[in-house]
Length: 471
Image (cartoon, rainbow, N blue to C red; front, side, top):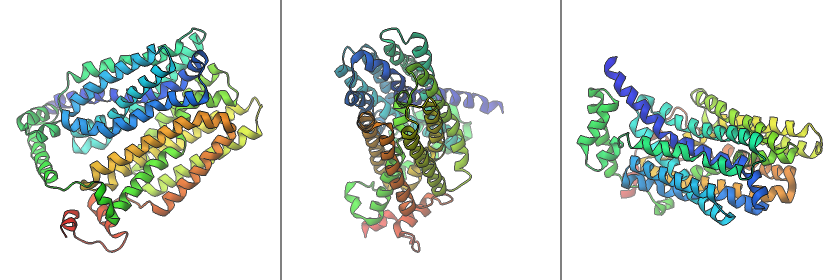
């Protein structure tokens, strides 16, 4: 018992420090929700400019996610997170001190690079530091830190907006708060070790064993080092897939499904609520202060629903869970569209809209988002994993960017009701995609899934991907 106490304690320290990257991810994507109304008033932002301010971070995140994994392979997970902490801090100060919209958009883009880099590097670091038996639970803590960061942003926005909303530049204070976890992340990462798997990849086996000995028992450390070396040797001799391999039908099908899952998660319009929730509630009839307070409910339900989603993943299949989530979100979007028209001008409308956005997020964060990330981690075999995850996450961020950019423009052009009817149509398309193309993956090994994709549901064959390429 005592032997494992110190390793467990040090592992907890590593988890807490590294998931500050997830907290920053959440805070920086959520803070714009409350800062935007004050920023719009002071800087005279038009709907299109609002879209660029909010979505420039998302475009940066797409690029950050694309290159973040590669940079962490070259420099190491720890060093990459240290560099990301510096970018978080510099970009946060740039946003806080921005004298005009141009500097704000550039700073938000740089902040996005850090957000995207963190979205791929932190989970990798956590996965490689965690024991196999606890990996799923530990890696999922980063998802909880992301939604917790968004909730923290909503709460602080509400406190500052309701108490100091009359003070010029209060939105700058909202943005500046993100500097604190960035500093803590940098200082903390100086005190934790590099990933043992990355050290093995650089032939630094003795250092890898020293790290494992600090977070495992002595025997576990030696056993895991041997497993890492064996896995790395296997991967070294495995031909990795690329764009040229899309000519192979089963690979093309997996990529189509992976990109489809990523797009489905975003076209529900979830991030229109996470980024513009305050604007939506204002448009429905709340004052800015009331909208800021009401928006806390959106953040709170996201955290609670994430816990529920993690629990549900072990109980029911991926397909029914995703279908139920999409049905729930689409109905909520339809009701928002109908009531925002039928109850226009009514004092009850803002409360109805808030209730529906909270219900929407319960379905989204409790069903759609957990299934999305789990299925993306399941469907790609070893040869496709790097290429497949990189391409699908790129599409996820790009669709996120398009939603963030277009939402205020649509809101201005066709109103709250018309905007949500568009999302309803997209929700129906998403349900159709899942019903027609998405396979069930629960209860199948990664090898069985590969065979299933290879044969498109027909009788499995034994040939491996490498053998198929040779043939």
